[in-house]
Length: 391
Ligand SMILES: C[S@@+](CC[C@H](N)C(=O)[O-])C[C@H]1O[C@@H](n2cnc3c(N)ncnc32)[C@H](O)[C@@H]1O
Image (cartoon, rainbow, N blue to C red; front, side):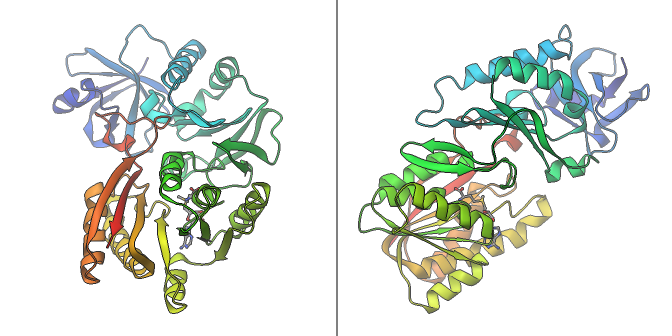
């Protein structure tokens, strides 16, 4: 097997469970490993550190699969990892038939994401390594997560950065265009073939429940960046009226269908357009809300996107605060690893101070248990939400 000698001062971070070796941390490449090949990482004395996927085209040159020298990367390896992922989730998520089964590095399966929607699974192969083991992975998936069908949504930015083309389509079995899932007593139709990402934002489940617990018949909820209406429908189910805003017209169509299916059509409205512009228009219309959710897409994919992303967050928050009734609740979410809870605190402090509105922190929440995060891998913590009560 080809091997990668790791620079002496980088060995400790790998042994401490950080799974990525960057291209500029390589001391020497022995052999000519190709993109996606499994290599052995060793220290300068030739001692085994870990077995990893290699990619010479990526700035993350190696992604660790196992620290166990006896463990080979084959179908049995993937079966064992899937079984561990399943066991990890045994009591993690209740009240739904939709959950994340495999969450990449956090399940020691770099670049692999698997979501379950009822009896269907949706898979993303995000790097050249998992791409090489496609056959073994599919065999292992069938064994550990029996499903009526599997659909591939490997059309991620990460994959392009690995030098791979997008791949989308049926993997095996049958996958209907629309799958009915539930979160508590709210039904959603999910379309993994045409929806965003794998079809549904499973990671906001706990926050949707939190919002629901905070509203009653008198609540007027503004759900900004609504997608297919997750927050709106949960709030409406508790008696609130909700207005959803998104620029994805097919997501809003799906939202309307979802609202009808839950007999909530008279409580949920939708406005198509750019969030910032619509927030401004709603202000001009003198609309007011008791609860506002801001759940934008990943505004900062890279570190240098952070300053403009924070500026946009500040503007969005300021617009939202102008629409918020006294004693209103604001949910401010970021799914960008590069934007921290402190960044959220800072942008909302600036926005609230400019308007002289005193804001109390109700709570800070993180991604749910089926999207685990590993202490030694900061990148696995991506979803953070600041919940404020604003006087
Ligand atoms: C993280 S998802 C929201 C998930 C949603 N809150 C849920 O619970 O399912 C972000 C959403 O923002 C929408 N979006 C992106 N840019 C936008 C913009 N400039 N204006 C309005 N919506 C936008 C996307 O279409 C996507 O539906």
